[in-house]
Image (cartoon, rainbow, N blue to C red; front, top):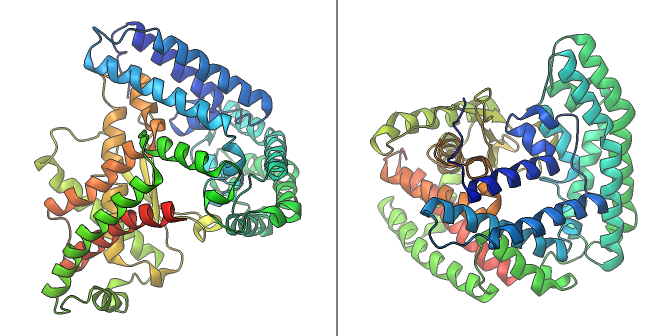
Length: 466
């Protein structure tokens, strides 16, 4: 799909330049959005790459503050403020070297990048294949830069918690144990022929596997021994300031950990009363835990296979789409597909997550559902998760925003980088909206929604408490 550009003015012109520069710094993000101009490159986490990113943020912040907010339209004022907040937070996080914490991560660490990109990047023509191979050949330098970040973080005591390091090590060991004939990247990427797939396999063998092995060795050495025993940021150098920055980066609010804690406690108290009401209705009195235990052992609440889990998720999306016109004046053109989380990372991945469609309409939005450890994957949890991640949750918000012709490209594609509260707030609300829409099949599924809401509230309490 194509979009007419937003009306030209100083704010939109700045937003367009800013977004183009962000894509230049984050080429795999461009690939995910269907922009193939940077398909032969990877991000640059080296000091030079960090300096380039900081220069962009600092310069853009100066330009943003030079634009007088008086007289701007509401949309232009929002754009200006979003750019300002993004730049301020990125500079603050660079000051604190957040990259030294994020470099070790079993969910979205550097070792997960190429397998993820292989699902979105096409290598089905000679030109596209050459770009993909060039990207693979850039991986050793990319991982070498990440090893240097490991070393720097270890030297100043800013390391991942030991449990995260151990999980990342285990994930890399699983990846490297896969015979090259069944390697993840060649298996996932779309190519034109078996001969082309063999070319991919050869580069993975010569470039990717050794780079992953070197990163694994770095983790298993001094880094594991130096990883923080306590996961709380209080145990990291300057931990209190780090935590305040992370609150701002997720919420854009300058509030204290104590305030976060109290919000969580208040929400849990409210949700608990709703859960007790359902437990009473279902014959368990006020015994919420007894009701949950009964749901856990109910065979009808557990999928028998990954395929059954995925089928149920697709059915939930279809039901939501059928009712959506009653609640939304506009529906996204992009469809939402359901995929299984890849086996190499399903053990460490969350229950579900979402990836946006390509901006040109060539790829649907993707809702990943995790079928690992099926006995723990309850339908009562799947329903609310699907409505949060897919329809009417992240897919509706993100796809509709991407398709909005009245917004500049930065607002259509990039505003989600302002902080998790923007996207996750809608996802959380969508679980309640699903209840209003009558999408939950039973009180048991409504209870699952309330459990999910309480889990988020409990995270505010536990996370700030650690």
